[in-house]
Image (cartoon, rainbow, N blue to C red; front, side):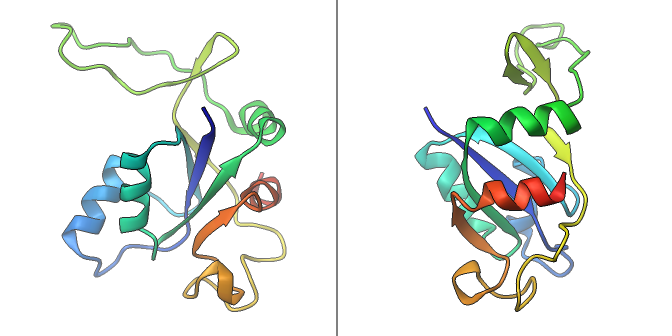
Length: 141
């Protein structure tokens, strides 16, 4: 299954409570943080709800490996709670477990010509980048 990378671009001041809750569920608490998920319809619905605050796209294997080498933090906690009711989210790669959130720098050369308030299709930063998310992540590492 393919992987999708979601990066938070904007602050959520004065955002709708549903958007704040969705950003919290996606573990995007700060700007310039990136999370990686398996692509599925439920996730795409969540990402579509926060489209005015994030950018996303399909992640390739080389960029994933570079992201984990440079910014990956090993998971040191346990996988479930003491009563085995809740499973904590960790990201697994090559047999090792990592935290699901990657802290990135602001990108060199900026996000786009028109800034962080317009969509990617209009030379901005927000929305679906498809395969071009790999270029943005490499500039943010």
